[in-house]
Length: 335
Image (cartoon, rainbow, N blue to C red):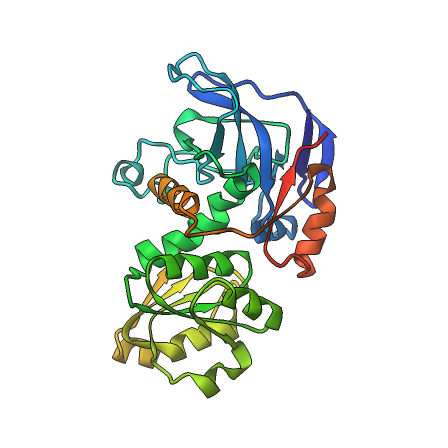
């Protein structure tokens, strides 16, 4: 079968033919219908993650179950879509048993498409416990990208930012995750301000509902310091994290999602004296997967997704790195 594989030291994925995987006793085999590309892929290809082995990439996955392991009694209907919970939790550790399965620390744990074989392929074998049925009416491409590009901002904003009706929320960075973050915050009833350096992204944000969209370079001219209950930084660079610390209110929360820099500046005096909470955010839980698909089904979140053939994955990763993809991109295995 076709697979796009990470090879240590190479800056592009190796497009190759490998055997179709066989599901283990507790696994299912998915025929991939769509796989999303992500900035995390670029970090892997740049050698920043440190993987020393070859594997198939693609951590945003949606497909149909075509085979199941010997221990799986569940019946899967033909044509039904299933999305993969990328954190690949073990199901047994303390974090998994208490509902924080995105933080699983089970032995030898790796993520789907990030350390172990993923969805840039025709087929993918995953533990049956880590798939979620996709409601009818949601397309494969939307389901695939939602497993990260909606799940991550949903977890960051609802669970970690504790955003509620009338919370004042600042969204910094309107890439794929940030744009979905705007929709999540609006769906929760928040009063949203979104900022970015790109006017086109600001216009797109304005089309999503009632909010203020401000160019980042003008933020300090239009907004008073300490104006927001929650600031979510989807960029994670020096300038954006400094803005986050400037505009969060005393006792407020900063949620850091973006990995633009390995280090960001912490202005310790205001964080301490104003009791500001700084919260890291990682992916999301299995339960939250069900919640985001419900919101998408209800039309409260409408992910913007472009599609392209999976065989062109290297081209589209280059386009992503160049900043030419305005929303999210899903690859379709149209072989």
